[in-house]
Length: 379
Image: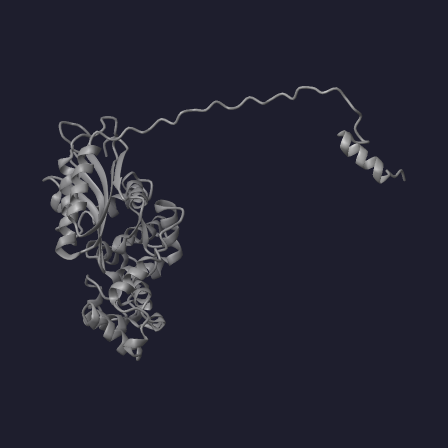
């Protein structure tokens, strides 16, 4: 085998040549053409955006907390938002993807609206609606459970439907229609267990009866004392000082949460027939149009003649209201359809509801609902 001496190798390195490559005359290396730089066209703000922003910022300044708003005019594909890219706790807003997951099972023939589901003792959760009036063992139809869940925001009905289709299916809907990151939806009973779990790890084992007892204890310190009693621990053993801290820590996990822009995307897909087939779309929008909760929220600020297919959400220091406003056809023009997704955090009760009502009034006053795109197909 031919071997180089060390001195010869060093000489080669210094000369910039190698034994394997003969010396050749230098040739210019062609420089590849660079792709032209294209300027990104800025999407012009909708004509109603300035008036809406002025009104919404005034509402935000007057409210003792934060508000988030996403508005999407479907006919013209125009959007505007305030804090709509932040993550917001959706509360019972998660019941819409639950309903979509159930309706898809119906589309595929696995369920029907007449399918009956047995109420189990472990399904029972505190909250509105009539499902808790039934005894365990009662068989309730899917149609009844969907209406209780959406129209009256019934938590027990929701957990029965989640149990029927599986959390995996619900979260698959969230990943597809809301965000690829998903919304990490849990059962409504687990919402309580996780929030109380910020106070003590023993809350993971709370039974349905325990959850009802905590709800009956009232809010604030009384509920914290009741939790300590149920878990048989001293109040000093709790990890956080109060219920406010526990729920704020729970919200920080981003369970059952999403940006309002992403949530609005799901509502747009539902209205446009991209979430369900035509029959399922009509059915779910009709149910959402009969919601009985949140009468003093967004719809209280909408004009006469408007319909609002929506879902409200209420949790500790959190309120939401999100849906599709439809203004009827005028003089043969297509109806106007606008998605509004809004939440408030901080002061709730009547103050929070007034802020949501004022958002509906701001959308109305800014002219968002006045004109439809004449090319929008009539439905």
